Length: 256
Image (tube, one colour):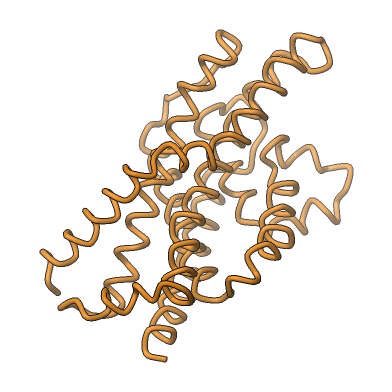
């Protein structure tokens, strides 16, 4: 594999991301920050939510930011390049195997996902102040969960980007992304669904559940959460499935 070509393509994607930094931040961070402000300030200061709720919602907002950024960073350009601009044809002529081009896109998406997730922490401190009580007592577990969530979002973006058409983008967000956010345990812990046992176990097919609970368990371990070892195992399994599916779909699209 030609590493110079791989790094050159990665640098190109980084340049594009920097050039579109402001629209990208507004697109991926506006909704999470609004939720942080509403639930972390408005609802708590009005007395409708306890102060501790800020610690519950912040990891979920971070998970949403990472998943949405990685999916959009990989899926949206792929949809355009394969079906509209045909720019992907120039990249396929690069002196490296086809699957490495897909891996480069995943790596670029992962970097953007991690950055968008980490930005949520200082932004939340600014919006919510001293009410945020995060713990970094287990940095290795936190970094591992961040890595797995970033790969989940980027691999999911690769799979979606190679599987849907331009006319189906709205359908993807209404039928896939929106339900995933509402039932992804981002704004409440998984244990809060104990009163709905069927739903509690049904949502375990939702990748956002593991992203939210994983970040919640490493950042605010005092809040009830799914055991970290189970989260890591589930995220690793989902990453492997989405990565295999995404690479298969990408190679099929590339040679068609």
